[in-house]
Image (cartoon, rainbow, N blue to C red; front, side):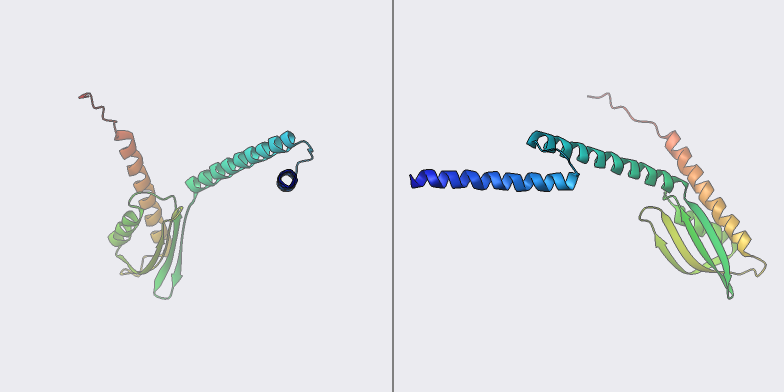
Length: 166
């Protein structure tokens, strides 16, 4: 008889635990359902909708990253503060530094970030005092454009190699 009482208590405890979990699930998913199967179905739908929202946010974010391109140059003392934000790509930094070097503009200090996009903030100084912010802006924009074009050409020239030796 005690064994039976323990079994009944165990069943009651499991039922209460299930009810608590279903209640939590109903609360989290804003389900109005009462039946267990309906609550679970509502939870699946809720998760599916969240997944769709996340995918939409990711697509929007990636589209935004494709179009980010900003170059700001301002005069600071004897030099310039150069801020660049653009799509991440191969050799962006190298292209910018080469363009500045060709102009006789030297980087005194720089901070670079390449997490989700390429970012650079640099203090530069020009040998030629006739160089102004507009000249530096144009040179940096041209370097970014040429680099992006070069990477595009490389991708279009890549031909998949098929190994027929197997």
